[in-house]
Image (cartoon, rainbow, N blue to C red; front, side, top):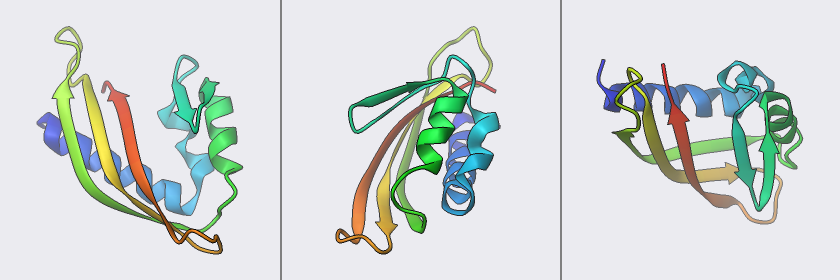
Length: 108
């Protein structure tokens, strides 16, 4: 499978789970995983999932606009950097939608 297909399938899976049950994203992270969200850095799967599950919005609809991938490490099969853009429509907040920009490092 090529990196374009892998990155799109990963993105669709991730944001599908993000929409329905963010706690189930834990297996995608490792102890060395890092996430920065609005200038706050979280290190490790436990802290990342805690942040995701405690976001102030519970109902969200992701709309993915672009998924771009490029190889990141020739020594690791299917290692890639993925850039995702789109919108998150959040219910029950003053701002009905928010822009989404995400960068992800994946190795399979």
